[in-house]
Length: 225
Image (cartoon, rainbow, N blue to C red; front, side, top):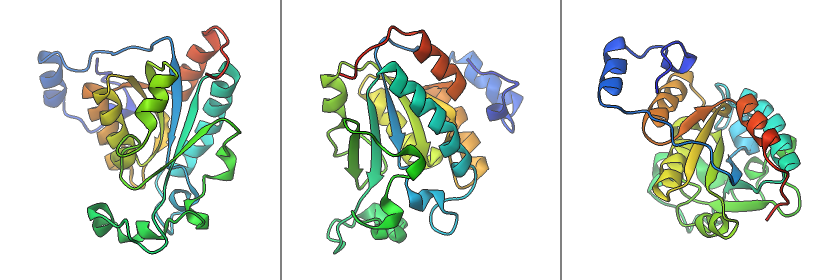
């Protein structure tokens, strides 16, 4: 349910909070027994305010370092996403009409590479995508299902864009979904907070990185499946 004292709820009127409470919206979906960590689009271009970054994205990357270490220690599956377009722009879309600069994120472009601070290890899955959601047109559902995952721990950027799209699709595929509030970031704080609030009411549970790490540490140690 809504925490009226949380930073996320700042700027939300008491009348709005009352509507959600009255309609019994915002109940927890819970933390299952088989989580996976999904890191969305923490690439160099989104860590650069001169390109696609800014806001609190750099801080979210820093916070995700500790959570990634905890996930690896717990032995849970880890998956990263990158936005990658063809060198010749042949897979351009309506999305790139809205954000044409994304077409510069090609396979070898420095801006399209996962940030060094979160460099994937062998056996960790890297998804290339051309749309906001990590699930749309990718093999993610099959990969998670094969590994018997029931809970998606969602980090990355931007909160109002690819994170939100991924959260909705994760829930739509019937995964328990947890958005890690200090491990997601946006180029502007107002949409960051507004989308966290909204996702927390309808699509996902909200937890901090420390809270998630504590849950992972309490789980029986598992080998990556």
